[in-house]
Image (cartoon, rainbow, N blue to C red):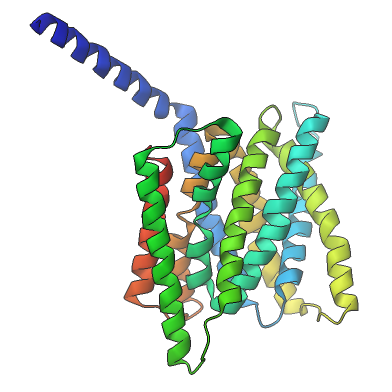
Length: 321
């Protein structure tokens, strides 16, 4: 009996070790590192965009981000020393086109509007719950298993969002405003859903192609969609961004959008949508200190606790499953 128990122990431990080795493969480590760098770049970007909110509308900022990213990706795609040909199957084009439309055109516009209304320190932690929606969507797309740790993570994230929302309401009352900016909070949550859908579609689109080519296709569709939207808004009276704001937004877009989306595409290809999403969601932990020190946004211990709970919940949803 003792031999059987010992054999079972060795067998189980061997399986666990094999699973752990699979998890910490060089590909997994590289993808995770890339996702964390992406999270930092996103944090830099959102704070730069917020700093120019008085001189550029969210729609103008989103258009500038997309157009600069297209220019950067075009340079990378047509470099003379590329060793592979540009090949993107039609099915991948469809997934990539929908991913950029849902995630970067609709989702980013919703988020930029939300942060303009309620601030980075409130909008970003709420939007950063997108890995939860990513997981829920993946249940239907790839039949992922429902686990207790993920349910706990969802509850933690929901409590974090509630704390952030309540603190935002208290701040508005202190500033003499009678009502909660429900639209700003709703847009932050909506952007979370859009980012989740875009991430899952990105995983499907980048599966069999070079991430640079995939991101180039995404930027073509995203930039094309922004042209009529931007021109229509200008025709209806939307002010154009100032030259100063344009330059600053483009600098932020180079890091937050051009490099950020490219690196995120690599991360999704290496470690999948759900793990990439959860690592990208730690971005508020970079963004909050930046918004406090550089943008002088007000904060409280409850809002910080809410952000920590939200990110912790997201980690439970994916990494502890």
